[in-house]
Image: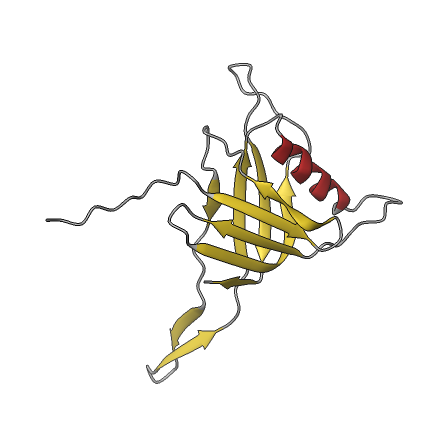
Amino acid sequence: MPKEFDISGLGFSAVLIASGYFPSGFPINQFSLDSDPLDGVNISPSKVILDVNGNAIAIRRPQLIPVKFSIIPCGADETYLDALFSANTPAHGKKINKDILTLIMTYADGTIKTLTGGTCGDYTPFRTIDSRGKYRPREYNFTFTDIKM
């Protein structure tokens, strides 16, 4: 009998810890249905090149790990994330937090991934409206330096 695989993302949750602003962390679980709730990109921990004699040389270097969440507007997750990004966004005469972030992601099958050394990336600091007259999902981008499998 063939093995059945459950590939549902149902039950995914995350906790984001900010070293200064949210040291106890807060849950992220109000994900958008209009865009990918969790997204990332491929990273290349090594690159292989050829030297002048045709020998393969592997060059390894650390890689940044980008993470993007799409969150439904008007919820608690949006409020917390807006506060965090605002506190870490430089502006004239403003003291910024410079939080170091930790993200703990828990998948439905019990798998846990912990990303560390994070920082706030880009986001739109206000709600936008689509052509149908409804709020678009809010996207929040982060960059991390390490992941524990």
